Image 1 (cartoon, helix red, strand yellow):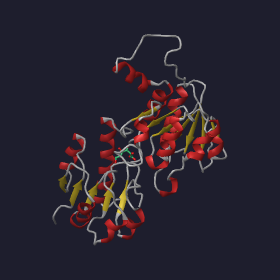
Image 2 (tube, protein in one colour):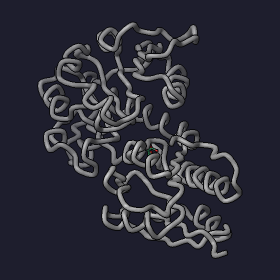
Image 3 (cartoon, helix red, strand yellow):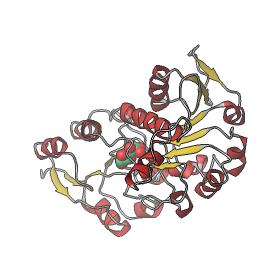
Image 4 (cartoon, protein in one colour):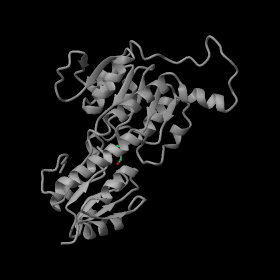
Length: 315
Ligand code: 8YV
């Protein structure tokens, strides 16, 4: 029997590629985002795929006869894959939910600190030669200590963010549809209530149609004018045009964004906002985390190869 054919759609960290090379699979490595037509062909030509967020599996991609049996997604979020269509085509989908929790929480804190302390703005001033020297009122920002962190969603990454924020002296509140038993977390009855009270609002919910533009002009208007919005979740959750407007007129204090609606494009109005910290989707971008994500995806492929239950099946 020939070894199952595995398509790896992006360059992987070295240890992940090394492990793939000793697995009982026939791997093909490509190094760029795979286009729709090529993904369609890949579903016909391979048994296993290791795709990433940059491979868009719309319903119509699954329309042809599929040979593929497993999409072992490299990443936690799977809204780039039409799960009902994958299921209808008999294709299993797995993700890597645990591997990137700590790294993404670290980045949420990074953005909070940068936005509240005006770190990106300050760095731009220094590089542009515009620093006129220390002054008692120069470039004052806001501290985290004593402030209320409002988490939207209370999954793994939100909890890891809360743990780190506590070390900075923050109080923790959240809005989540499920009941929370943690006595140190103030659960708000509505998103609107949370937005009205939080000093930092941090988004930790999945992307996709259900959460599209959850943070819109109306909800931004409910936030305190001193508040900061942090997004390490998905760009689609925030109406970027409305956010750019809120930042421009200082309806809110600042935003720290790691994800965007049409990555790698960033809304042009955001690029001109001094009070926006903009990072290129670095949430899980550490060598340790990207290696762990690859290993978790390969654990799912190993399970498939040996006929075991898939540890991280999402469809
Ligand atoms: C990943 C992410 O880097 O896992 C996720 O959901 O957002 C990222 O941190 C990306 O998805 C890789 O496919």
